[in-house]
Image (cartoon, rainbow, N blue to C red):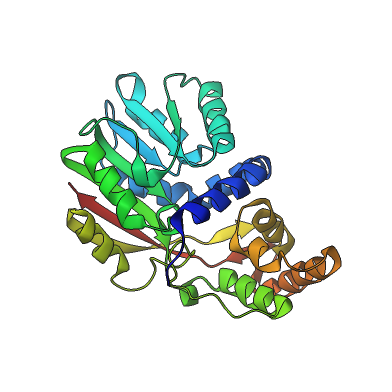
Amino acid sequence: MEVDPVAFKEAARAAWERSAAGWDAHTPAVHRWLAAATETMLDLAAVGPGSRVLDVAAGAGDQTLAIARRVGPTGRVLANDLSPALLALARSRCRKAGFDGVETMAGDAESLRVEPESFDVAVCRLGLMLFPRPVHALRAMRQALVAGGRSCSLVFGRPDRNPCVAVLMKTAVAHAGVPMPDPGRPGGLFSLGIPGALERIHEEAGFREIAVSVVDAPFELPSAGHYIDFIRSSASPIQQILASLDAGRQQAAWDDMRERLEIFRDGDRWVGPNELLRVSARR
């Protein structure tokens, strides 16, 4: 399925500009959810003191701060994102933690404006699958790396391995009366969860020593309602699916999702299963 990359990215930028403050409010929950996966990603990329790291699709900067703590005063961190509002939050988060040297650069990951061979590592946490042309982004990341430099990313796996997200999608399309989106469509949440997709795009971008592994990342929250609040705060595809409905019908859809997600309640907590894929490669 072809998409217009310019229109796609402009819509994504506008959506994240609107959602930035709400998304940032959930950063503590996102940190708890992804902390372990983030640390293993950074371990695999060998991020340490003095490393020069390009953080692509940095968002509100949770993983950017983790990188800054690792590289220390002798390293370099450049956070890139399509949304200036998100990057402002990332910059503020790092400065409040004492990392004034973290740099930010708003713009398209598919055409990064950085000096060639100026970074040791490029990472992308849950962003690569959202790019309409991920090969273009990987080529730009590769160009930014020194010879032998490492790239490491996290993406969502298959829909059947992420059942809480699948519940959201199925319920939303049922209420909106639209077909289920093709999971393999460019820029879709599960577009790189298809077996072989990550290997293919990294090879096409010129990377070598490509390795893909599975990461179990359950999302633990007090309730299904908290999960719905989290989804509603983001620029997720669920909002796009429900956009044609009036406010009352949208609320009915959200209420239905919350009820269906109760199957993931575990005693006094809610645990949403999520399976991510981690890919590492070298220039």
